[in-house]
Each structure stands twice: as C-alpha cells, then as structure tokens.
Length: 477
Ligand SMILES: Cc1cc2nc3c(=O)[nH]c(=O)nc-3n(C[C@H](O)[C@H](O)[C@H](O)COP(=O)(O)OP(=O)(O)OC[C@H]3O[C@@H](n4cnc5c(N)ncnc54)[C@H](O)[C@@H]3O)c2cc1C
Image (tube, rainbow, N blue to C red; front, side):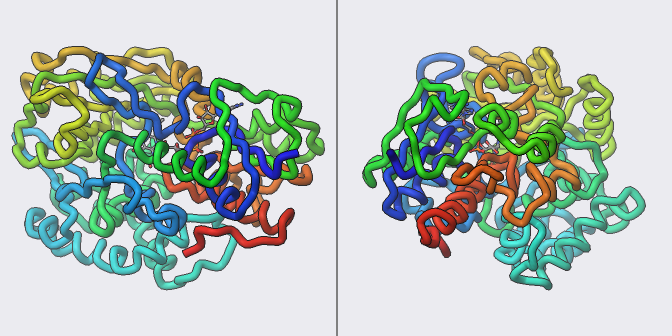
C-alpha cells in the first residue's frame, strides 16, 4: 500500500503531490494526459520552434501564492516581470497602460491618475492581506480585517452599475478596469468580475504579471523535478475512473471534477446530490498564432506588454460579454491576448513571434473564433493578418477533450459567481474533505477557485496530513 495517490497533475495536483512528498510520504501521481502539467502545458501547436502555452500564460497568482513562495518558485523558474503588466488599446491609436510601476500608470492616466492612485495604492500596500482573504475558503475570519474591508468596498464600487462610472471620467481608466475584470467570463458589472478584476489589477502594481521563460510548462517541469527527487512516482497516459484503477493508498487526492469524484467511489446520497448541483460557467475558445514579426499595434507602448486586453471601450466589452451570456459570440468579442515573445525570444524562431489569444463563447460551443479574433486585433494593429504564418484553434468543446476538468470549455472548472465562491464545490469550512475517509478533492472546483496558485492542492494536502498522519503541511509561510 502506498501512502498517497494524487490523480491529475495540474498545478493543484502537483502542489498536493509535492507537499505530501516533502512531508515524507510515498506518493504516486497519476495523469490522464501523456504530458504532466494540466493547465501548465506548453506545446508546439502551430509548428516546430513555436512554443505556445495551451492554457495559462501569465502568472500574477503564482507569484503571490503562499504555497509557491514557500516552495521557492522564483528561485526554481526563470520568471520575467515585464515593465507593463497589461495594455488596453483603444481606437485612434490611444491605449491604457498598466505599468508595473503605479506612479508611471498614474502619470499616464492624466485626470484619472489621481483617482487611480487613491483606488489602488491602499490595495497594493495591503496585498498580502488581500491574498490571504481571497486565497482560501471565504467562511473564516480574514487575517487582515482592514484589507478585507477595503477590498470589499472597492469591489462593491466597481461591481454595481450605479457606482462604477463615478470614480473615473476617461475612457482609458474605465476600459482598463473592465478589461481586467473580464478575465472572469461573466456579465459586467457584477461583484465577482469586480472582485477578481481588482485583485488582478492590484497584483499588476504589486508583484507584477510574470511570464515564465520557455512557457508555463517550465513551472510544471520544475515541480516534477523536485517531486521525483523526493522519491515521488508519476504515471502518465492513465485516465482514472474508479478507485480500482489505483494502487491501494491511505489517502487519495483528486485534482479532478466533482463529477469524476461522484463516479470514483460510493458517496453518501446527500453529498452526491450537492456535487450534482455544482454548475459550470461560460467557456473559452482559443486561437494561437505563429507570426513572422511582432504584432503591429498602432500604439507603440502596447508592444511592451505581454498581456493585451482587446475589446475597446467599457461599453463595448460589456456588450460582448452579455452576448455570450445570451448564447452567442459578439461580432466584436473581448479578446484576451498574450504576446510572450516580447519578453521571451525563446518562444519562436529568430525574428518571429507567438500570440496566444482566447475569447469567451457559450458553454459547449463548437465555434471556430479565428476570424473574429483576427478582425478584432486588426482593428488595433492593422497589418496583423499579413504576419500570420500559421494558427491553431481550440474550440470550447475541444478544451474538454484536452482536459476533462474543463467541462463544456469552462476553463475555470466551475462557474465563478457569488454563490460558487462560497459553495466550491459544497458549503463547508473544509471544502476539500469528502465524506469518504481518506478521500479529498483538490482541483480548481474547490476553494479558492481557479488560477495557477496551487493553494487548493496545498490546503487539501494540509487537511489530509493532519487527519491521517498527524502532521502539519510543509511549505507554510
Ligand atoms: C486557456 C486558459 C488560459 C488560462 N490562463 C491562465 C493564466 O494566464 N493564469 C492563471 O493563473 N491561470 C490561467 N488559467 C487557469 C488555470 O490554468 C487553471 O485554473 C489551473 O490550471 C487549475 O489547476 P488544477 O490543478 O485545478 O487543474 P488543471 O490544471 O486543469 O489540471 C487537471 C489535470 O487533471 C487531469 N485529470 C482530470 N481528470 C483525470 C482523471 N480522471 N484521471 C487522470 N487525470 C485526470 C487532467 O488531464 C489535467 O492534467 C487558464 C486556463 C485556461 C484553460
């Protein structure tokens, strides 16, 4: 019998496996794909020499994560922190630029600069309190009450239609906040989009929006090296359906969907019904481009930013996101674009570039969004189309074939709304624990939700170590 099985090798499965191995347990990690990493995979999707992140590309959440900090991410992976965290091109060659430096952002924003500082400076100052508040399950007393209250007030302001236009007058500041909040894939304004957007925007001026040299896979590879060095064993190409597919173990942690958990073993009827009520949100459809040169953005400063929010004004992004909620893709969609090769030339052959894009589509959509994405980028970067050497499209349904956790193409592994921030996947002070002795769920479908921070995996490992081995988890800050 082994001490622990971990199923699924996304950042949460890897964080759990590393934590358990570091505690001295004999751990087996089983992964359905031939490649380890889940949402951290990087592949040559368009041709030899072009390295594309299949899922995650930019890592503010990893840099701020208590697990990754304690593990030593910044010493183990070559991360670049760009001088611009995100850029937001607007018509007429204008752009909103979120510099890593708050001062520089304030200077560029003209009349809205003063309010940008008032809004973000106190949040940046309390970034560790914000990370603590948002980085676990919400049913507990936050370590920093002032940080939680401040964050709550800011979230209310930008999450309500009656107040969100009061603070900023200019198109750029409003569009910047809306563009960053749109990561959440939910109609705006809303409290969840606002909360997630404000946290990300605060990270932009705190730790920054780091990009790993060589792609996100380099994070997974470093975790695997460390895990194997501690004696951990990995089985790839093995889809786990039930407990019978695994060696017997004292504990099992699933970096999978709640549905997979419901099939894995007998569960009490009440808990099974609660899992059945877990809902999925709208989806993403992705297009990766190999380019013969850099994207010809009209605004020169957009060239400096790996992350670009393409969608125009606040009103346009609101319309595009509402269309998705109504079951269609807007002709001018919100496009989240990442051009990692502006800071990492290793991603493409010399002089060439890669561009990672996705847009929001209804859950289960089979739409190929390539043309809509190209048109939207052309609007702010005329001549973009002529640079395309090759492209690769992943529709929403294909995302689920690539990774079973992304049901219908929901890349957050469960709708992100107020209810499911608390009920992830069930309402509990220990949402990683299941009613079955020794069985835990540790994926992004649990608290504290999606993104590459590994905290779901670390918390599940911490609870399992305490309950079955009488230990506290290592990698505690
Ligand atoms: C297109 C896209 C862009 C994103 N961009 C970012 C970003 O820039 N920054 C960021 O922080 N986050 C981003 N995310 C979100 C982030 O990637 C996820 O939240 C994160 O990867 C979730 O980690 P996880 O470990 O819970 O699951 P995953 O990373 O999804 O990994 C789950 C793993 O479990 C395996 N698995 C599932 N079921 C089984 C089974 N039955 N048997 C064996 N193996 C199984 C899967 O194959 C997969 O490898 C993005 C996601 C996508 C899809």
